[in-house]
Image (tube, rainbow, N blue to C red; front, side):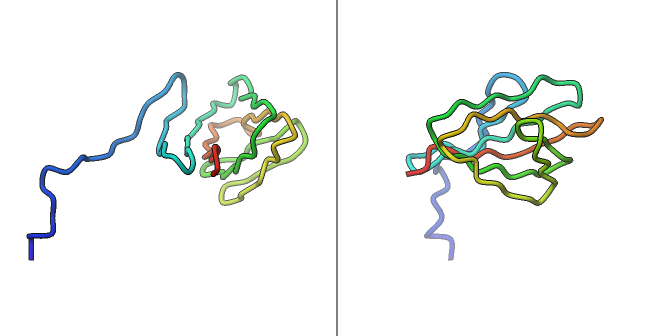
Length: 102
């Protein structure tokens, strides 16, 4: 029955950040941020220092001006590199970045 439900428990919600980014999860083990880039938007620049997992959820993005990553694809961005990510088409692209791995 309903005795196991904690009715006044904390209800999680997304945490908005600046620009077209939305923090979906931020915990001790990792952080998950959704980024949305319009076709004409500046590239999102990521500095070296930590590995990241890029997961495209809408459209196509271009990484460092040469690698195309499409919806449904996942790419590991190694800690040793710097990365510029932009929409590769004339429409909006959205992707998830997972970082701060434990």
